[in-house]
Length: 505
Ligand code: HEM
Image (tube, rainbow, N blue to C red; front, top):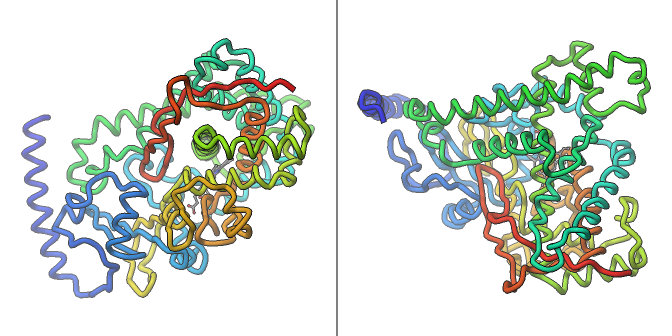
């Protein structure tokens, strides 16, 4: 570290301490703030609670301080919400007040300071982006049109695993093949494109850049520079890397995918509405002047992260739980065999006839929620919550994982037991009809992709269980399901090797 820089930072810190004490003395207005650990000047609670603010650590804090608590992380206020009724207030009753998003130094880079949809503040731009994205991505018509593609991709996974020499003996890292499938599921919708194999150089490049984007954004490593702006010079290297990754990604989306669609759009064939893929509709909106070229790129960026990774993580969790719970796996296979007939491959319209499959998916999303803290919300102005004052521009984390895993609301929540969704929780749906179970959020900023995610999960998990007996690798009786939490994500730490023994029909 540069000594001069260190000296400057220390001086800056000292000045900031003095200034913050002076400002707090001068500030007349007394707010009734939510409870939380006692903050110290400048650092707030950062040194007490540390960097790793994952869903489990935030649950431990909620047990201590209650269902709404405030953490001062350097200069940032972070409010953690941990009860269904307060989640209702944030997401529904006061949904407009809390409907904005916080970003941080890193998300600012990846979203061009909110030129996207997922991370933009609540307002005109968000409304327009959500409207423009709805028809090409988030309707039943899209499901009807693309489900054949998802069934085809899942079928190819089955064929590839069947023909893999090691799958039935030593096992394979199934997730790698499923990742290719998820890219194809979404790239077919976006660009009418697919990648032939895991070795396709373009797929390899894309996957690496998206992976880097996720790692850099979800890491807790950069917290210090975000919480205490005076320390930001130390983050220069990190932010430079983020900028490089962002530039390379957007350039790749542009050069390899968007340009092709633009060229095709200028030919006659593309006038036919039925030949249009999602990005053609988005490019039409650009042509009409509703959005600009950067907005188009950030829509592609959003789908790459919001759609592909979340669904892939959920599939991976579902399979891991099924391997570790062979009785559940067998019960699911029996349902598929009985309802569809042995060897009759599941398709999207079958989903509603398969209640146990639906319960397995719900249970996976409950216990292993891909976005356990939702995407952080924010109140642009000072607001009230649970009788407390919430300072303007607070980051609001709804601990959706804890709502769905709190023993006050769920019977033995630590157990993977899909039956709960057919018995005591039979009325609870994934769309947020009950605030104790909101894996896709609820309200204005809820996940519009639920309409695609649930059938993709059903088709993929259904096909795998129909066609294979899924087992841990030789010498292991369980898969390692250690979690890796991020700024608001949750995935499995180690991608497991899984033995897939083909069934003979
Ligand atoms: C299992 C898969 C998925 C899970 C668990 C999931 C979960 C979530 C959650 C929790 C949120 C934030 C809700 C909030 O902040 O209140 C969200 C937002 C979002 N999701 Fe998903 N999602 C999944 C799949 C998808 C897919 C497939 C797409 C697109 C095709 C998608 C697109 C989006 C978008 C665009 C937003 C931002 C909405 C906004 O800010 O207005 N998601 N998702």
